[in-house]
Length: 129
Length: 166
Image (cartoon, rainbow over all chains, first blue to last red):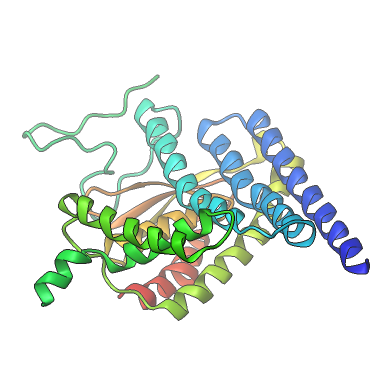
């Protein structure tokens, strides 16, 4: 009995934490005014916000149900795919020139997004949107 | 014998991972499902080996585990910091900037894990790699000292990844 009460409180706490961070991510998405800065908000909700929800779900299934480990899979896939999509959005932003132009790399010729196939021409400048 | 084993298991760690994912996907555990997962884990790497000829390099498991714990802790701490910045700081006073991180890592797997770690820890997003892979372009949400961010990434993550992968 006490165990299930304890579990209920733990679930409650995780849900609160998850909703607070998801809310902050939403607020950040609306409030920040630069597309690169705005990218910071959703990638973060994906980590702590959804992580807390999944922990809540896991505690729930182990205390009141059969106990399932699907949440670990969700977390794993999420942590692998979130940086990839964030990276794509960042690359598009750099291409469209919708952010500060990145400084040139110290050692190589150019950033991979901006470099063009080597046909003797200079790499393009990012186009101004 | 070695040839045959290499043909049968082109990516042993992928086989292990696929089997584990299949078992985790099942609602109830049964030996039959584990065997089916193992079959999938053998067939899928064989059929995709053509597009993935090289085996990924070895990495050490125990330091990897402590690295994951470190990153999870950093995600929690930094999330609170970023939430504070988003909620309390007016837009005009958020000093976001580009940070260039010169890379000592050379293996693609290690660089991928580093870039993923940078994106997952709040406050920084890895945006791009230089065309020959010598430096990483990172966007920091709010910092007054880009050099400190760079040194932090290099000391905290890159040094550990170098131990794990190289």
